[in-house]
Image 1 (cartoon, rainbow, N blue to C red):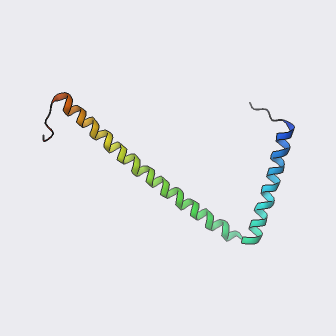
Image 2: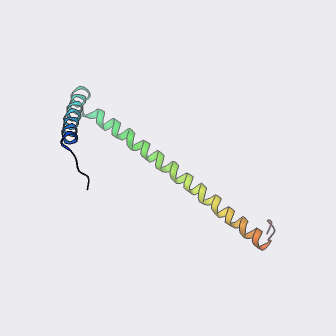
Image 3: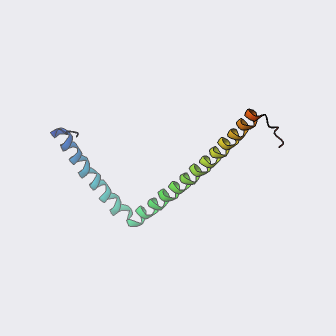
Length: 82
């Protein structure tokens, strides 16, 4: 269990209030649509990164399978053509 001293608690309370005030200012200046746009952009980026990760994982799996196959060929002296 982590203990927090009074200074840390006070600073995080101040940070919380400052963050809330900043968020309210942005909302008042830019409107709700701003948050919808940046949320959509963030979601699209996450989707893109997930797809890239899946492709990289599939490529790595293909290489691993190939290297296992090559190892078996070497172990059993099987020619590469069959």
